[in-house]
Image (cartoon, rainbow, N blue to C red; front, side, top):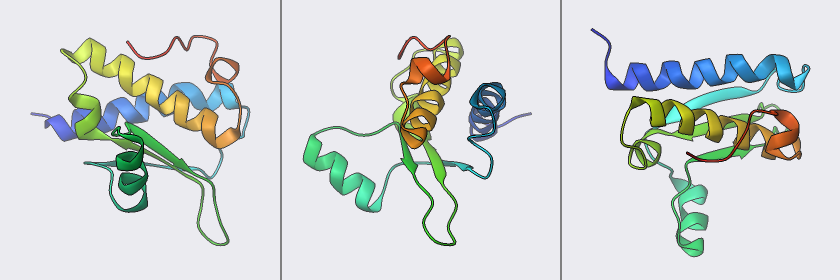
Length: 116
């Protein structure tokens, strides 16, 4: 039996695996993580903007790798079923990767059509 957390992690991995070939090596070395909710500076910035982010992208600095984070609870709270969940996870991964690479999501993934 697979837990809800494991299923979510797998959706993120599936989205990354689908996107990596389209990125042409630009995502090599980028760490991808799932966190329950945003915290720290990300949460402070979000509160100032009046929204809760679904993900976050951080460029690498010094010895730390670039990182894409998907926030599980905010994503899950915005969908009704597993199909919508898979679509939203995919959109968040594309958006965060595009932000990291400083390109439009549509340029990184021609199939991108925003949030479901």
